[in-house]
Amino acid sequence: MAHLFTLSAIVELSKRFNCYLQGFARNIVSLFKLGSRHNGVNTPADEIVRRLVVTIALMENLFTPSINIERGLSPMALELSGEPNRAINPKSVCGVAEPGQTLSIMDEIMHLSDIHYQVRRNLQTKPALSPRQDFSGTLQKWQDNLPSNLKLAPENFEYHKEKFSLRRYAFMHLLQLHIQQLLVFEQLQWPPVIHSAFTRNTSTAKACDQASGIASIVNLLWHTAQMDIHNASFGQIVTTAQVIHVHRLLSTTDANTIASTQSEIITLQDCLVRVKGHCRLFNWVAGQLEWFMHICTQRDFWTDEGAWRSVIYDQLMTLGTSFERLDIETGGKCFPEPTTLHAGRV
Image (cartoon, rainbow, N blue to C red; front, top):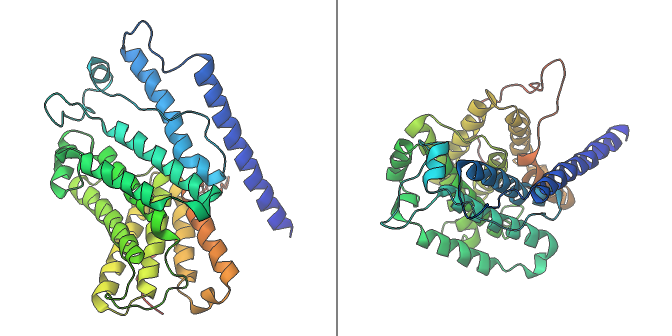
């Protein structure tokens, strides 16, 4: 009981701390009028300030739904074009997509983060009235309007590697796949029921395809440039994908499907192991994700509906945005290295 009380206090303190930091950041933005141009002149200093403001807005869009609070900044776009941007970092500029049209990956990430915020808040506040179709249509339109060099394609990984924009390009597509998963996740049948490929419903098929897409991006990113995504949102993206992978393992008897799903699970697990080497955030994420995948493949896990619904919700909504438990003696690195996971039906 004392442990539960302490845990509840820590969670509540974490929420208050996040609210305090974000409120402080928003007040600073407002007080100093950060992000606004002076006399219509766009200088490198203005560009740096604009990036700071957009970073705050991006964090709000991605993280405030996890602690169930409203964001404080209005949606905004980041323009990364022209001389100020080149003066800041000449190696990070994404090339012109079409003659006369400049396009920034960060603009697209900011736009997607706004959709992410709306989807998450909609699921929390109006679950019975969620306009899934509207969000799906918005994402489809977004994909259709992307220029050829920003579309998800293997050849574009090499292109963005040369442009020094590969990590942002990969995260952009990981984020849109993650949003797609959030739209169909609650339509999955839990506990999973074995279906043939011909009887699997559309939502299940979409969720599985999106999880496979996430694993494919992680794999291509590593084999193209020995690079991994290691921001806080990635933990939640991987967690959601792995939950759907487990659902697919538990709902099929097809040997090829099981083998391909196991391979994708290992791809994401190996990525987390690599990232743990230089990012403490993922010590806790990797340890908890391995625990979750172990217990949810046990048959008796599904006998208590209240328990498994709570576990799945907690994992999806908080795991990817939480830091590991800090330990002074071990520096937080108190979880053993995960063993290679060979998942299968039980």
